[in-house]
Image (cartoon, rainbow, N blue to C red):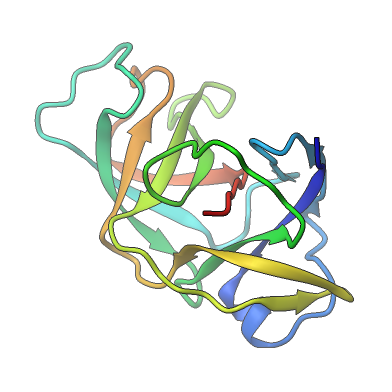
Length: 175
């Protein structure tokens, strides 16, 4: 089973041709089906503004339930998930390319809601080179602050409207 490393970069860093990962990113190995990178701390100036769906109830929901629409706030409103170019993903984890993430409860930042986020419209993204390594970029690219949806994998008990800090993992797969 191939192992791969992922890097989660924000558009401003990529656009500036950054040659190194930001200090808060920690690369980690994972299996070929779902490879993640952990962010060591809450990313500065990055937050999701969440608007729950009108009929959302608290508690457990089936995976794939739309929880909310969101706006992503960054300096450039762009975020990329990169995967090593030899990554193999035999099974798609969602019908659309996306990011998995953890939303912190507003009341208790240790009480987390695990979600995955997908774009409602795909993006074709060119390959980039980072830190001397070549990466194949997936269609996972935040190119706008709106038109994104959050889907549930866990409990929506504490999901309420507001601005949340977020820690992100990234996954990707090839067609």
